[in-house]
Every structure is written in structure tokens, then in C-alpha cells.
Image 1 (tube, rainbow, N blue to C red):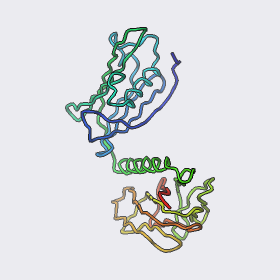
Image 2 (cartoon, helix red, strand yellow; image 1 turned 180 degrees about the vertical axis):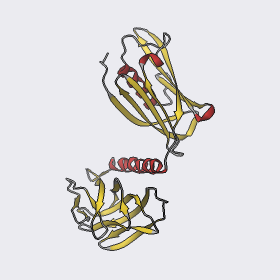
Image 3 (cartoon, rainbow, N blue to C red; image 1 turned 90 degrees about the vertical axis):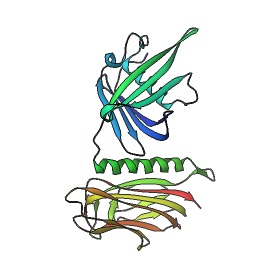
Image 4 (cartoon, rainbow, N blue to C red; image 1 turned 90 degrees about the horizontal axis):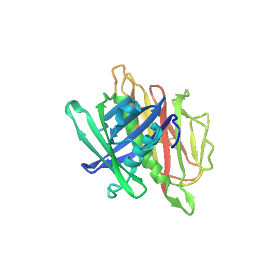
Length: 277
């Protein structure tokens, strides 16, 4: 068996008891303590259990000979990633408890020589209080997952162009300044412009974070012409995110810009993914 070390894995999963709902999960092992995090990708509700030593979830009935904490984590990952139709290999289910808690049950088939036994593990995850900014970040991750799926499509033997940019400042012309990228398909500069080197239809997604303090706008410009506007309303002193999402026809050499009329905070994002000719 492998020796213990810090590790974090994440992915998507579903449960037969909630067929219409998909979940995002994160399993983490740090200093021999395991954490489990689940998120309902529709409602954005989250549950979490941390600081679990191996003795907190391993009993005489489910112990795996010579297994370290990292081996259990990998087994749990296999159970969450397994095909629901192949119940002979692994099994998983969730149920709701009082107070909004969630019970996660994982079962794994252990084969030794010619015999097979099932090791079952139960975790009671506590609900997390989610801030509005966390929900917006989660929605952005969902967009990123969708864009990652687009990258798997092949156009003429090439992976479709894709880039995700981030910005932490803007210039005097209110343009957000995007990070420099090493790409044959996109060019960025200190002027805040993003040049497309390969024509086609692009899915453009932007999320700008800041404190508007008043009714201001976030604009998406193509070759200097505004093609989409999103309005940011007073946030009562709190930081919030304003999003843009547009399908844009781009020719080679066309330029995109994002401008905003308020001070940005932390990190804003811009993603471009080519979806067609």
C-alpha cells in the first residue's frame, strides 16, 4: 500500500436517490486528516466534514488490510466516480438528516484471492453557510467545466481554441488588464485588448468583481463597439460580481475588451472558447 501524504482530488458525481441532481466533490488528505466536501451544483448548497483521522471512519467491519489513509481516499474517489449501473464494484448514496446535514454512504468491493467482501463507510456532513460571492464563484466554475468540455471537441485535427484570463486591475480607459498568455490563438497586452488569431464563433464569458457603489455598467466591446452591457446595482458596501455571456462571431485579428465603471476587487475572469466556424 502507498505511504501517507497530502493530496486533494475533485470531480463530479451523482446518486441514484437524486437522479436529477449532480454534485461536485472534493476529497482532501492533510496531515493524515481527511476532509470531504460536497456541493449541489443546482442549488449551490454545500456540506463539509473535516479533521477525520483514519480511526474516525474505519471499524473492524470495514478495515482494509495494510491500507493507509491515502488508500482509503483513493477508494472513496473510485466509489464517487464509478458507474452507477455497475453496483457490483462500488456503491454510493446520500440522505438528508435533521438540521440540513447530509449522510454520505460509500461501499467498496474488496477482493482477496477468490473471496469478495463489501466495506461500507458512513459520513455525516454538516451544512455550510454560503456567501453570495461563493455562489457566484461556483457558477463561474460551472461555466469553466462547460468550457472544458468544449475543449474536448476537435476541429480539423486541432483542439478548439480556448483561453481563460484573469485581471486584478484596469487602466485609465476603464479597460480590465488581462494576464499575458502563451498562445497561438490569442494575444493579450497591457492595453487590455484581447486579439483573436483564429476566426470563428466564440463563447465569451466574463465575471467582474468589485464594489459598484452606484448604478454602473460592465461592457463587452468588439473592435471598439459595445456588443453587450450588464448593469451593476448598488451593493450596500459589499463586493459582488457582474457577469457577461455572449456568443460572438470573430474574424482573424478582431479584438475584445471588457470595461467597467467601478473599482474592481480581487480577481475578475474572462473566458473565450471557439465553438464553431
